[in-house]
Image (cartoon, rainbow, N blue to C red; front, side, top):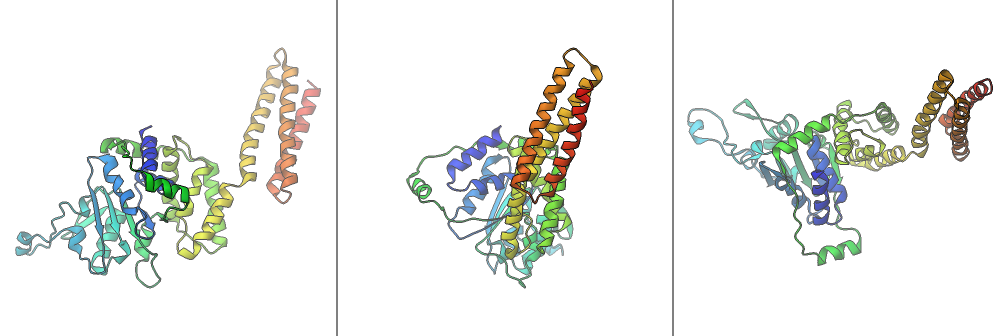
Length: 370
C-alpha cells in the first residue's frame, strides 16, 4: 500500500521521528488535528510541511504567530472595495481559510483578535467572512509550541481542539544523531492525489471496532476517572477515528488492542495527567491476562462447537475425533491453570478456570457415553 511506502520514506528522511510520523499520518487519515510541543530545531515545521508535499492538488498554509499577530496574517486583508460599501469582508485567497493542511507555529501566541475565528475554523471547518459562514477544505491543522499553556491564559479551548498531542525532543541516541549528521541522501517521498486521499479517508470509516475494544475503552475511562482524569464523552467518541485510522495505516480493517496505545496522546486534559494516562494505557494495552483470555476463550468455544457437531452427526471416526477435541480442551485448560498460578489475584482467571472445568467434565461424560 502506498501509505506504507510514504511512511517508510518519511522515516528515512527524518531521523528518530517514527512516532511523530505515525501520528501525523494517523491525523491525516482521520482528519484530526495534532499538536507538537518541543524546542526549536526538532523538525516540527519540516515534518508538518510534508502534508502539503505528500498530497498533490492541495494547498498548504504555514505561519508563525507572535503576541502581536493580526487577523490579516491568517485570514487575509480586508477588501477595500467592499469596505467602501460598508462590507467587512476579507480576501482569503492564499490564506488559512483556503488551506487543506496548515502548520501554525507558536500557536499559543494567538491573541484575542485571532482566537475566536481560529477556534471556529479548527473545530467546525468554517470561517465567518462578513458574518457569512464559509466552509473550508481544512483536513488537518498542526499546531506547534515550545511550551504548554499555563492556567489562566484563556487558551484551554484552543488546547482542547487538538485531539493528538506529542512532545518532540532532540534526537536521543548518539548513533542515530551521528547518522543524521553524516546523511546527505535525497529521499523521494511517494505522493497521493487529493482524490486518492479522500478515498482512503472514506475507507477508514469502514474499519470495524469489535465489542472487546469498546469494553476496553470503558475500562480505560473507569481507570482514568479513578485517578481524577475525566476526558469528555466527545473526546472519547473522537478517538474512534484515530483507532480506525491507526488500524488502516497498518493494513487492517479491524481495530485491535495495540491500536489503543495511541490514546496516551489523546486522553489527558492537563500536563500533570500525562504520565498517569500513559501508565494506564500501557497497563491495559499490555495486559497479558486479558490478551491471554481473549485468545483462549474463542479457541475453547470452537472446540466445544466442533464437539457438539460431532456428537450430533455421529459420523465414522466420531469417537476418535471427540477424544482429540477433548485433549485440545484439556490442553487449553492447563494453560489457564498455569496462568492462574502466575496471576493468583486475577478473579477473571479463576472464573474462566471454573467454567472450563465444568464444561470439560460434561464433554468427558458425553465422550464416555458415546
